[in-house]
Length: 122
Image 1 (tube, one colour):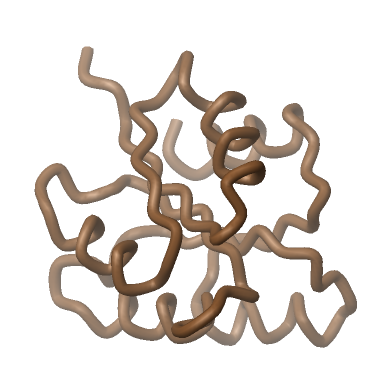
Image 2 (spheres, rainbow, N blue to C red):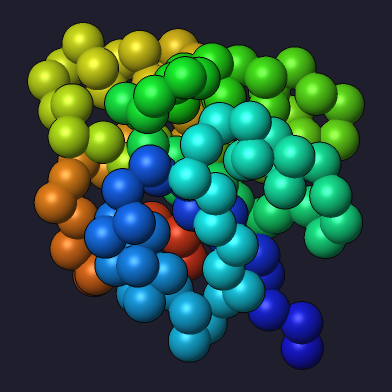
């Protein structure tokens, strides 16, 4: 059976390595270090089944990446989960207003990441 594709977007290589390490046994993991690259990858086949997206990145922030994904014909249905150090209620509410399927706070733990991804895409 073909593995589901998870796109991990973060400007910190350590975070990418950690998330990819958690997911690589069960999912095909693609990575992007900035918003522009993330949008490019999301538009290519196979389209990701899920995007784990950092909020605070240089250039285009995660909110703008999410907005563009949600406005794209081929990408609007992709669940987006923000993975961020911003963890107050207002940040979580903004994530949901942006159309995110979830909001994980850094530092993430493997069990939570695995559970959220499994709930969203199997």
